[in-house]
Length: 237
Image 1 (cartoon, rainbow, N blue to C red):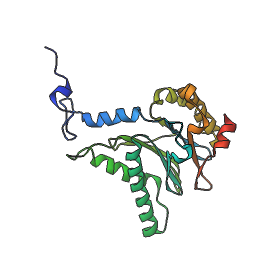
Image 2: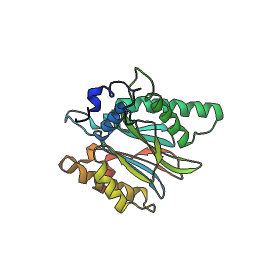
Image 3: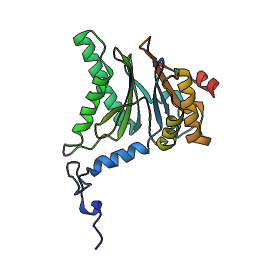
Image 4: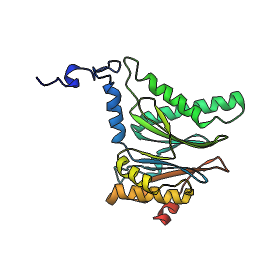
């Protein structure tokens, strides 16, 4: 007799219900949502940190500059996301509040990992509370603090990992392969940007254009987030 599918047994109907093989199916569905999201790449370079993402403009009438996919959490910390961007915006706002509270309390900028842990704590609560759904988004959080350059990836479960370079979203397998082959810790921000654009161009193919790209960096010596203008991206292309 064939085993009954998990869905037929109803193990995926409540976030607090484990399946017989010890899985929270609603959380796994949230991870699938991330894989359908826009592609986002993060990279730690020799002189700072870099985030590059696809805005995925679905309508020619949309104003490209009005679509924001890279968010400033504090002057020295930034974030981008794949999945449900409205979920990301709420989490980023919580991170911004945490950063502001830290500055007011200690008169000193917060470290990157404290922001990551705070956001992951919020995500984790939504994997164990009835009546809630998991956040359907993964965040890349990059920053430069007194401990150096840091890049973290968070997933819908509330788990986080630190990376030298990573990618989330629909183009993950192809771009991950490129990063494994071509990423070096000695890359400058400009060289890292070229590599990210090359990888996105391969994944997006005919849909690729400078208008779709959002990119930002934080230099180690400045510790201030700066957006990369479109004309600079066009020159690199």
